[in-house]
Length: 493
Image (cartoon, rainbow, N blue to C red; front, side, top):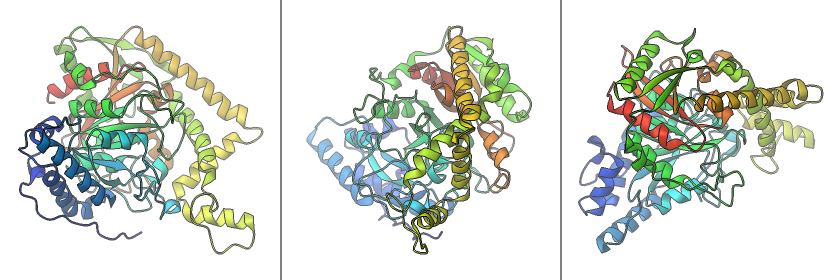
């Protein structure tokens, strides 16, 4: 589907994006009056105009809202008023999170033209902290995919190698940070959709504990698995982003009331004497040798930083992919029933009966992968199969969660590869859904268990393709995951 080109911006006084700075550095410049938030926003819009036609990261821009926010930040800075932790920071939003008045497509034709009247909680918290919201970012349709090739609006390209995928489903959010078309972004992760793109694009991605960040305003895929989390170019920036968006929300009954720490400050504490678990199940057949070498180098760096390395066992990991694709598709089948041409979505005009209208509207609006998952989930929930498939999958899910809890009695964090391979080429796996699903083999277990994790860059292949290390920690222990990720980052592998 062809899109209109996105607006460009007038040339700013200083081109900030050619010399990237950390979130803290940019904010400090705005507080001191050295940098204008309006100029920073203009610089990023210019960058988007230059890069987006090739990478296809942004689906729409919210320029009027962004510049109004930048003006408010500049006005407050000029008056010496206190500024929020993200004051003037340009941020992009994955298009499964709603923003008031902006298109919300979830990468699907069936939501074309939908402009929600409210903000997702994570979005409103970013703006309350001073962030400048640049626009909505491309993703796999309804967050279903591992390559960002399932979007109805065309695939996103990996900035490291434009012939390769950025990962999915939040590939656009990862690519935006990797190409410096945003300082930070929001994505969603159901089975690896933040962590795997972060690995493929060489950025930091965070999977918060289930319930740590409100899902209010997130277009649902699988409600017991969906989570909202940030991307950034470094661990400390990602930690700052999480502190802003985390916390209880009365609009989301599953959100945790636990206090939100200053994750950035806690990430500075170091890792000496931390116990790091390494599960053999994640280093078995199918792991690319170059990826293995990078992760082993990261483990060696952690040991040199004062960590104790211990083997741990997670024997039910081999069942995680089938368990995930039963539970996630079953929940998707239920959640996507609302998109029927009556409650949501365009209505097919070529229908003689109500049943035909439902069938035609959904057939025309949904892409092939979404249809595949709806069919799989509907089958798993159908009479005679519920107990054999969905119920059994939930039982194995509980076993997986208990294995992690036992492991965290012995270690403070677990490290693994994020993905079995570096970024693969566009079109390489589109004809083989099973091969595509196996790209999530190292990420779905943490999703099923509800624990938290961070993907941090951990070297690169000989061809220069990024490799990410996944750092997992027990529920609500994001601080430890950030500490370990900072140590890997500091090793500069």
